Every structure is written in structure tokens, then in C-alpha cells.
Image (cartoon, rainbow, N blue to C red; front, side, top):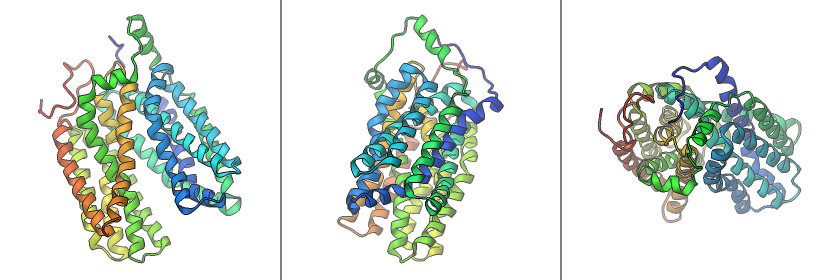
Length: 414
């Protein structure tokens, strides 16, 4: 038996060290994301090679997802978070010093590996620390803090580049990761007692593959739904600026459109979490996909800044209410024995969706106009909403000790 966690949490003690590192890392990430391609170009990369260097962050996350689960299971979530922040800081400092394209590419790839460990460990930590009745709000707030940091970061990056250099932005991001490591040290190590209790009870450390094999049904059902959610979100971020450019909208106006959409997105993360905790996860998961799918279907009907902006805001609404849904569903489905290993596989589903969504747009546009690609993505998203509606539970999960735990893929009402 695992020692139960208390049903109350001292937010005054937990909120800053739990969410602060995410804000700091996200600010650093937001500061350098628009600059990676420019750095690669300055080091002699072609346009295609620069795009590949940018993609190495996502590739690093995909490669690091399963090892991240194994690492967190070995050393604990708190230590994994600190290690991820330090590794990220080292990689960003290497990017600051990079004098060759190869060195920059390696640094960007390592930031992806660090991001995989950080994302998994923070999700696993809050899953353990927060009572089930508050889980969706806690994880939605986590998703919201990352959005806030990512929104603020580019402004810091622009300020630094204006008064210093692109390289200095990497130094700033490294400083943010170091500050996040220091703040993480203030986190109470609440999971060490559970690991010790498992060891004393004779539970052996389990491999990632054994945990994933045991829970393959959940990963093939709920995990597929999460893949669609992630694909729709990632595609939204790429197709809106492409459509705006195709309609002759200038970059400055496109940035304003994105800013408005991001503002709508940031305002709705907590209400979405409250709905999930009160009524159940499905009442956010399905509507968010329906709204995103509607945005994809309406986008080809737009032509000017106002209509594109309205559709972008609609998609921001769909994305905003679903903040934290992927982490919440993963937390609900994760087993007590082998949680971090399971979450490694769960995040692999999500990150694969992040990569797959924009790839669908690229493949369709090889043979058809961008409008057709948008319509295809809208159809996929709506089909995904039906799949998610089938497999996401329609009830709020019971707290530990509240009775027999239901199969997380069941759709029956209690």
C-alpha cells in the first residue's frame, strides 16, 4: 500500500516553488524560440537547414520522453526537475557560445531532452502532491503558467536583441533555467516517502517497457485521443500565420492577431480546470476539439485581418479551456506503481501529436492548396472529438480511498 497523501494542500507553501520554475523556464523558452532559426542562418545554414535546427527541440523531446520516465522513477521527481533545469541551462549556455552550426544544433537538441525530463517530472510531482478533487485545476494552472511565460518571453527576447545580441538571449534563457533550478530546491520532496515505502514493501523497480505493456490498452485508446488533441493544438500555431501570409496580411498584423488569440487562451485555463474537476474531463476535452475543428473549417472562409483574427480568437478559446487536459488525463490514467514510467509513454503520445499535426499540413499542401489542408485538419479534429468522447471518462475521478478505482477507459457513468 502507498501511504495516502493528505486531502488538503498548503498552496501558500507549494504554489511558488511548484509553478514558479515553469514560469521562469517558459520565459526563457519564449525568449529564444523566435531566434533559433536566425542563429542558424547567421552560422551559414540554408532555410531548410535552419528549419531542421528549430525542429530539433521537438525531436529531442520525443527521444527523451521514455528515458525521462525511467530517470524520474530512479531519482525522484524533485531531483529530476533540478537536473533538467541544470541540463537546460548548460545547453543554452552552449548555444550562447556556439561558433558553428553543429554546436548550435546539438545545444538545441539537448534543450529538447531537458524539456522532456522537466515536463514529465513536474506533471508527476503535481499528480502526487495534489488531491484528486483539485487535480484538473492544479494541472490546468500549470499549463496556464507555461502559456503566460511563453507569452512574456518573446518581449524579453526582443528587448535583449535590440540592446545586445541574439547570443545574449541564450544567456538570458540559461539564467532563467538556473533560477528555476534554485526555486525547485524549495519544493518539499513529498514523493520520497512513497518510494521508501514501496522499497520496504518489496516492490522492485519496474522497467518502462513493462509498465507500458501492462497499460497498453489505455495508451492505445486514451493515448490516441491525446495525440489528436496535441496535433490540433500544434497545427493551430502553424496554419494561422501561413494563412495570414497567403491573404497578404503583414507580419506585424499577424503578430497582433496571435497576441489577441494568446490573450483569450491565457484567460480560460482556470475555468477549464474547474469544469473538469466539477463535471468531468469529457466536458472540456470534447468541446475544445469541436471548437478547434470549427476554427480549421472556418479559416478558409476568411480573407482579412478582422475575420482571420476572429477565427484565431475562436481557436484560442478552444485551446484555452483545454489547458492541462493532456496532463490531467495522464494523471488520472497513471498507475500508482510505475507512474513516471507510464507518463513517459503518455508524453510520447502527446509529443508525437505535436510533430504529426504540422506534418499533415505539409503533406497535404504538396498536392493541394492550404485551404484544403485546413479543411482536412478540421475533419480530423472532429473525428478525434468523437474518439475522445468515447474513451474519456464522463465522471470526475474519485479520491484515493473513495472506493474501487474504475478503469480509466470506461465511459459508463457511476
